[in-house]
Image 1 (cartoon, one colour):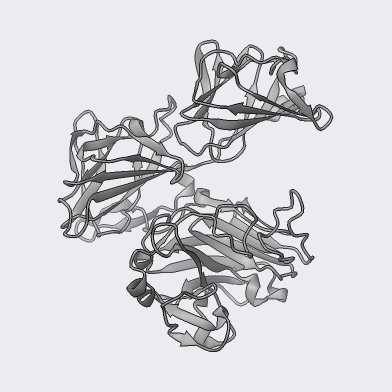
Image 2: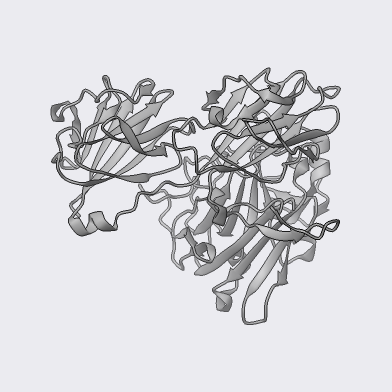
Amino acid sequence: MAEAMTIRLTALGALSGAGLIALGREAFTSAASGRFLSATIPAGSRVAADIFGFFGAGGVKAVTVSATTHNPRDVLRVYVGATARTELRLGGGPQTVVLGPGEELAFVTEAATVIQLVVNELAEAEQAARVEDSPSASVRVRLTSGVGFTSAGVMGVALSWSAAERRLEASNAGAGSLPLDAVDPRDSRFAGYWWRVRVSGCDGTAYAGPANRATGDAALEALAPGQWSRLWRVSHDDLLAVQSPGTRTGCPTVIAEHELLAVDSSAIAITATTDSTTGSSLVAQPGGVIPWAAWTNLSVNAAGATRSEEGWELWTHAITGNPNAAGNKGFHGSGAGNKAMLGTDFVDGMPLGDLSSLSIRYAVRTAGNDHILGRPYVNLLIDVNGDGSLYKIGVLDAATNPLLNLLGDVADAGPTDHEYTRSWVGGGKLKIVAELAGVTPAVDEGPGWLNKVFLIPDVLAQYPDAKLVRAFPADNGLPADLTMPPLWLVIGDSNYTRYSRVILREVRVNG
């Protein structure tokens, strides 16, 4: 494979997917000995097979595409003539497609974005071995209604993308069921999703379930107030049905939060259960199991997280890090240690009071070097006031002092297998980095936040709108300039210089 060329394209507005981008070789600014090129798109939305004249039109190229958008309706297509043969989301990280002679890349976006192409010409053997990839992603939709939701018919809703919240939104919704194709208008809708929904703010019980668009038939299930439903499989032209009463006293609207997980069946843990009344075997989705595809590597310095056949592997190296060096994924602060972090948006927006349980099944692969920080612990990003004005990090960890230990291990196998289930045994207890004004610790073992434990009910008494969110908390122990998800697992810390390796088997929240 030849040395790659990187091309950065800046789109100042929406891209329609039609017309070649009106740029030639001479229009690009060059850097890195001509291997990095950049330009602003003047018109058009497509790239021809010769990639602006920098490559031969008859060759086969691997093109890795990334973009600054998170809108799930922004897509990349590969066209053969007038037909799209491949379609990928632009958001979600780098994705690779193969571009052959006569084919074109087409970009469809709803707003301005920056697109980066890393192009390699492929030899014959490389072409034969190449597989196009598309990382899985989740889509969030937030609907509000002043009168509650009804499931009969098809909702005629105009969804808008909120770049700040990274979700699709619509207000004054409620009449009819949400069509899946309003959320994901791609041509390739047949892969389907796992769908769940959370309804809050209504006066009574809400119901939800998938509905058949042709007949309107739906088997709606009751939802616990403010809690996520189980996962349902939906695809193609299904409807996402929600039925609810009107607003509860003191609530301005009823809110339905939909989440679609674009993963295949193998990524979701499915277990068989038996109906006690009929004895028939059913397939049920265990509530709270976080899909592997919903996790992202956020590690700092000489640490990382890698997906394997066993699960996710978190690891650190026994070296001192090189903080904040260019391209080094350093700390926001001055830490020189190594911190492996694996984060998820699975609980994004969850009220802090709704978090009731958490468990982690894992295996230790460095049992001879079994340090307290070499086993997984948990960080939560809390929007304390519910409006983005104050962020705090909640910590669920183990400690040498039993009064401060919030995680407990149960061995899942024999003494030499090093397989465990680690649970949040403190119930509603957590530690808070730099503590929290106005809240008295339930356990206070001395100076420093690591020696204090708070009760969630005490936090909510002072800060009733506290919730879990994605944000940039500007914490010295977190990655520089990186937005963090609401929950992440950790081994190591900003001073940790040991070798550690942990395999995550399963992570479960509220179930």
